Image (tube, rainbow, N blue to C red; front, side, top):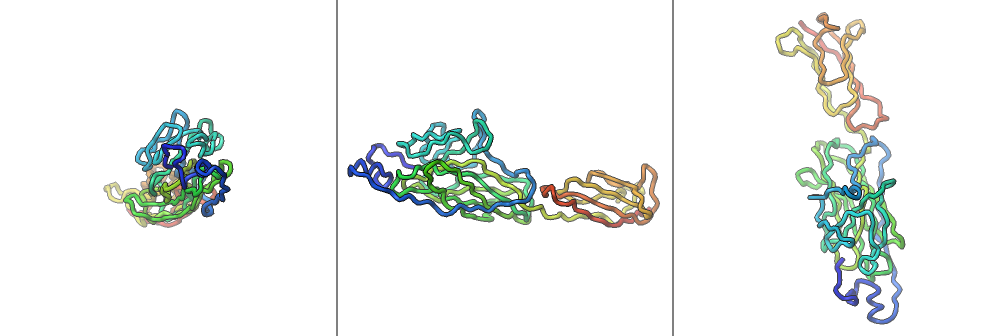
Length: 332
């Protein structure tokens, strides 16, 4: 939002200028943008992969290298600036903005939100590196946004228009998903924007970017955002499991123990049974391997049956454990 130096310089920008110039009121028709995208997931673990609520008074979040906007501590940010604040002053810019008494985060005292005065050009508002995500898995990205502009002020209001961009760590764009515009409202209303995206097969993390497609070419393009979250919706794909089919616990330093090769697993157990179905080995750690003994006594050469159970990291806690069975030859 450009800040004029003279009260009657906002031709094409606000209705009060028309009143100042012509001496009569104009009835404005206020429109809102495209419908908000609202794709939500119902499954997945309760833990959030990303949860950015921008901190609290005295302990704001650091957005260094995570936005193209410049941080300011003034009550009314200028074009291309943002503030982390617990309220919005409704007197900003001749009362163009709504008064917002608190941030969006439920049950939080002194919580902060990101208040953004649109830059003169489209670009990145917020970004977040999300690590520890599973490949080929569906996630939900969501945030809460509010249009700061009060209706009935501008003759041609500019609405923030948002897109989610998902990038690989090397900057390759994986997905672009349009949210549309944050609509005007007679009273300040938080709108939830949510959409689903799928990670690539192999990922060391993705970069989540919120893009404002709107350039500040008129009155408006100002917003507040809060509670940016990424939530897992589907279970991680089962990782390949490898268990050798023979081992030789003879002390020569080669193939002396039986181990399981598996990544991305939790709640792991392994039980080995002899030919009569009696357990001879049990482990709940991938680092613990069978040395071919039962309570310190060497087991006889022969075929043994093993049973594995585990959960995939990030799986829905309501999912059943994954089970694998197989056999191994103990040779001496």
